[in-house]
Amino acid sequence: MLRKSIGVLLGVVALLLFSAGPVLAKHIPVTLKGYDGKELTVDSKEPYSPKQTCGTCHNYKEITNGYHFQQGRTDASGKIVMSDSFNKRKPWILSAGMYGKW
Image 1 (cartoon, rainbow, N blue to C red):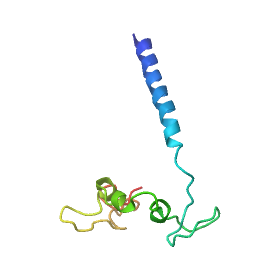
Image 2: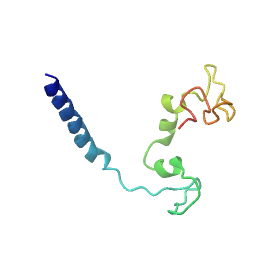
Image 3: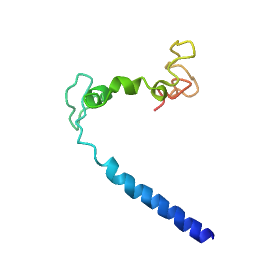
Image 4: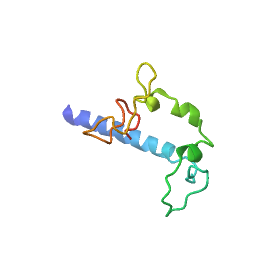
């Protein structure tokens, strides 16, 4: 029974992996752009801008106003609580939510 269950599980995992692969590969080639909208070169030291890079095709304003995108940026009253000094012991944590963590 266990052997059959493992076989079915592996079959489902393989099906999910192989069916998702082609879907993920269908995005058009993207040129990374800086905050000024200019194309970045491979050896550029400038950070890329998601707004300039993705915002021409995707609704950047809608995505960045989503709940999970903003989670932890403000408290319940709307006051911004994100801070470089939010957690002194773990300086990479900038808020109580996901905002500023990744």
